[in-house]
Image (cartoon, rainbow, N blue to C red; front, top):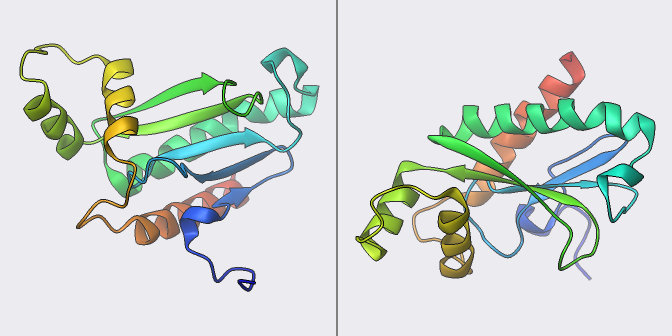
Length: 153
């Protein structure tokens, strides 16, 4: 049995508040790629409690700001899903320059950026840790930013 806190950060929550938990995406180790999930599973946003609804925007904004500060992506995509787990969760996906360049090399025929296509490609392509990317360090920095911003805010 692994002691609590000893497992890699990719298997742990980065931040938890009264209504949501924020964790690295387990299936795609792109640094800064976060999943925001309600602590009480729901299959629709309409099922969130009024308090969770009120906290949702601030939670997504704080997580996005932390990604932007630490990873410095060109954009952060936000997508809502409830397919695999059947529970609503948000993907906060950083579109970094290196990622876009990798995609462009793999798909030179795509002259316009399509966020959904890029995200789908990245999720299929990057299933194992990425050489030269320090995901644990990135997620620790995001955790620090989130903790200080949520306490201050």
